[in-house]
Structure formats: C-alpha cells, structure tokens
Length: 104
Image 1 (cartoon, rainbow, N blue to C red):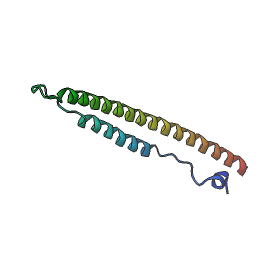
Image 2: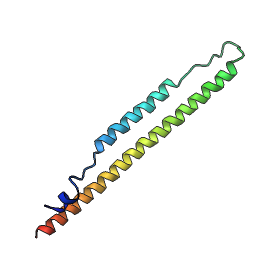
Image 3: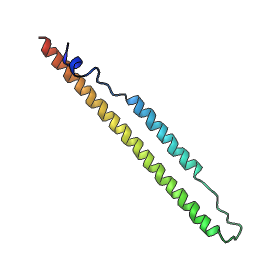
Image 4: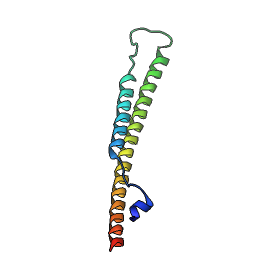
C-alpha cells in the first residue's frame, strides 16, 4: 500500500463546481440589478413623492452595492478554487514521487 492510500483516498479539487456556483451567484446578482428598477412619478405633485423618490434611489443604490459584493465573492470563489486545485495537483505530484521512492 502506498503513501497516498495510507493518508487519503484521493486528492481532487473540482473547479467546475466552483465555476458553476460562481455563475449561479453572478446570474443572481444580475437579476437583482434588473428587478431593482422603479420609475419615479415626475408628473404628479403628491406629498409622498419626495420620500418615494429618495426610497427608490436608495434601493437602487443598495441593489448595485449588493450586486457588486456578490460579483466580488464570485471572483474570490474562482480564485480560491484555482489555488486549491494548484495545491492539490502539487500535493498529488509529491505523493507520487514519494510513492516511487518507497518502491525502490
């Protein structure tokens, strides 16, 4: 039995899962921006219009902030997944070298 089998069954990162999750989050962020739009009533002079305008602007601003944060998380997920995959591949190579030395 080699070192790889002793210490772990398999070294494997699945970057495709990270990409799928990142894409789903990004789609959600884009959907948030698209539904955040509301139209201001500029024609009537009702008492609550100023408050409504402010609330609309604030909600649109917050939706953009949330979307930007989600997109940042997506980029971080992708970056971390790539780093894990590189570490896993390097570790697997080291285990293979160690296994080869132990067989000699």
